[in-house]
Amino acid sequence: MKIIWSRLAVDRVSETAEYIDQNNPSAAEKWTDTIFAKVDQLRSFPKIRGLVCCNYRIICRIEEKRLSILTVRHGKQILPADGILT
Image (cartoon, rainbow, N blue to C red; front, side):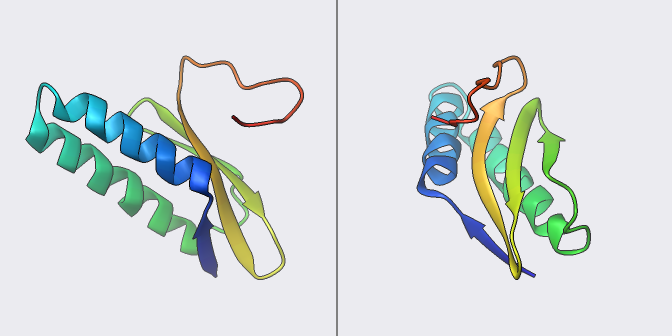
């Protein structure tokens, strides 16, 4: 299954890594590697619509031949009721 990252998801990972990097560059790199490794595991479980990793939710959309990563949000953030993930 092909995994596609939305621009929003990439931006969220980048912003979070930059924030962590301010205090701990090695932790930022480890966090980023962990997020990408967790998403890669979805190839084996393509029916999953979301994951929790390192206190972050990875929100996905299942499509015919691909899995789209829509966003990555901290677990304490409330997802919008209207379904618009900004």
